[in-house]
Image 1 (cartoon, one colour):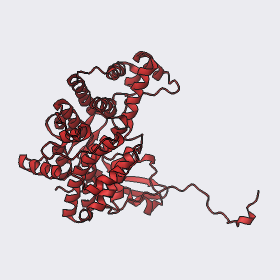
Image 2 (cartoon, rainbow, N blue to C red):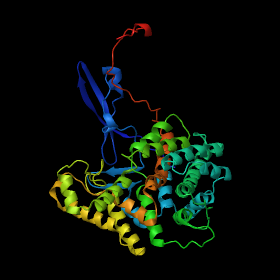
Image 3 (tube, rainbow, N blue to C red):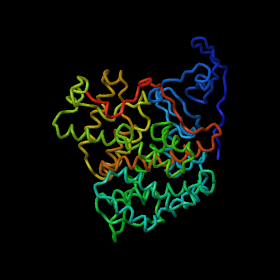
Image 4 (cartoon, one colour):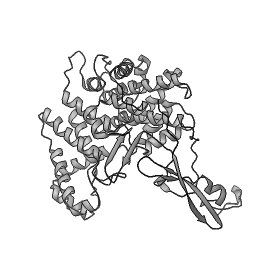
Length: 438
């Protein structure tokens, strides 16, 4: 497994602060932004960098995923996302992210067999899942089950044991697929199905989610292909909120299960993993409100109260999200295969057409993102909006695992401990309770 190479150092940069004249080392990137090493700033100038949201801070050097938002580029281990989505499977991409190279046929077969062989969860664990209330938040259920998995597999917890890490990697990929289907079924009060090892990862995910006991499952290959691509497209996305959380928690040498559980909780926030659900809700509001697409977009431009354009624009991508184009194509294919006309899909196409031709949206770079069409596909397959974020989390498992493993092997890793700029009271005299009157 490749270890992250130390960043290449360039000529130092000079920074003058008051009476201090600092020489800050520069690190070069193979692509994208390089950086300044500011470790000496606090020691020599008694200052820290102030960067809310860490928008200009690189906390790590990574060889896993490259994103260029200005040019609409996403690459896993150097491979363009378009090529991976067209030619690879989800487990193939998972192997690539985790181990650094595309597997050959024998290696992929062995990896797939290990994952599929471990998809069954213990009977006690099935009882644990059944204990959740039917109306429980699915992401809370998912995070809880990830923590619970650690109690069933103590031999996979040592973050310094290569065999334990290898076991945890396979167990998380395998069990979370089963758990995701169980969460869906428990929310609908449906019986839980056992895995079928003979089927592929995605096909059996769909069978376990939507199959009926004692009936033959005849899967839709177009639906399975679209689901596989969705998982690939969301498998990793550099140092976002949830991935940074996995790394930060893992920097304390926390085991892989607990670190990934922290990532699930971070992803559950509506500003992160819930965007596709928000985009679908917007389309529903447009349909039920009776406005035409043109009228809605005019209201967006006029900034009318309560009118927000969801699923457009991205914090990183300032051009068309490369994942959105792929998902849009599969949305067409899924609806055609199901012989279903989706009014929401027609509304989505109308919104996109205006956004790509109207100067207001072009100037603001409000292009469709990955969340805009993904919810439509999940909905067509049969998932409720509450399951959209858990499916996102399932897709992100390989990325989180890869990032955690890279972090643990990186000799530059230190336990995460951000600093602050204190703005509170300097010193206050304590007043006993009896003396704190009006």
